[in-house]
Each structure stands twice: as C-alpha cells, then as structure tokens.
Image (cartoon, rainbow over all chains, first blue to last red):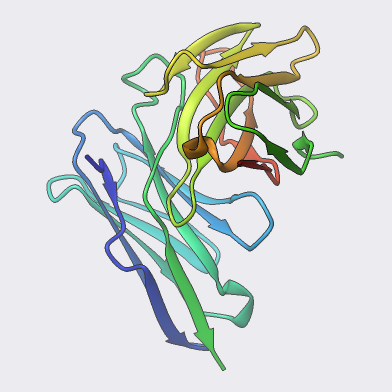
Length: 116
Length: 116
C-alpha cells in the first residue's frame, strides 16, 4: 500500500516555463514533507521541505505548496532550466509526531524533462 | 568537506550469502539512515541509527541488521541473500539537534548490490 504517490512517471516542460510536480499522501500522521532531486548514478539531493504548520515554502526558483485537507503537495519550478532535468522524489515523515526520527517514505518519482 | 561516502560502489553476491555495506556520514552529522531502492521505485526506509543504537525501523525482515560505530560511521548487513535483495542501497546522514529532531538528510551515491 503506497502511502506517498506520484502519479506522473514523467513530465516534459519547455525551458523557461513553469514545471509543476504533484504528490499525494494517505497517512494522516505525516507532518513533514520533502522534495529530492536525483541524477543518474548519484544519490538523491535535498531540494526543499515544508512542515505541516505551513502551506507554502519558497527557495529561489523552487516553491512547495501543501494542502493538508486534500493530502496533496506540489513542487513548482519557475523558470525551468535544462539542468532541472532529473527524477524528482516526494518524501514524507512523521518527524514531529514520531519522536524526531525522520525515516522517510518516498514516492516512486517523476522524471522531469526540460525541452530547449 | 566530504559528503556521505559509501563503499563498495558495486557488489555481486550469490543467493544465500551475506553482505556488509559501509557508510561514512557527512562531517558533523551523527545520525545514519539506510534505504533500499529497487529499480523503478522510490527509496524504502530500512532503519536509522543514532548514538550507536537503532532508533527507528522500516518494514524489513531481521535478515537486515546494522551497526553504528563511535565515529558515527555505519554498516548494513544482509544475511541469507535473496534475488529480490538486488537493489541500490542508499545511506543518508543527518544531525539530531538539541530537540532530538533530525535535520535534512544528505544521501550518498549508493551501493549497487546484485544477487545472482
């Protein structure tokens, strides 16, 4: 039973446009959410996070939105650049309610392709 | 500043054998987590070590065990290997702060284990 779902295996976006990656979760205990980016032959790289007390967090070109009632989060990348082409993983944990340990539950990932 | 380092990078083992994977955390980090990533899937949490003890565990059988040393480095041991254990094994390090909360995890490149 997948607790974190990324329903789009791949997404193609033109350079300069907005990329929107979506993620849904089912576990109400999740209170901390992260996005990781992964290039081939490398480990995942942390991008941005958000706790459940917020509904938006920005860092440069990256913004994460959290809709707790819908159990949905999204990552917006504006503007999209060729170097953004990678696999993006959504991850969640019960960091605050679970005693501080952050064993992450990951989605299957979305392969983002930025077209020139 | 060295990031998270894992060894070996690739490994081939026979079904039924035992394997040990190693991880050195990022400088300044004291907490190590291990993940298994099968092909086409997101990473799955195996367990987390802090203060040389297993702090949190995912849904993996007892064949998967670990250890953390006083210098914070860690080992993942898998006994009685099955073909289904073939995967990329990722180590992530983080810092547990004064509030017993983890900071964001940094991942190593992973060890590619093939069981034949």
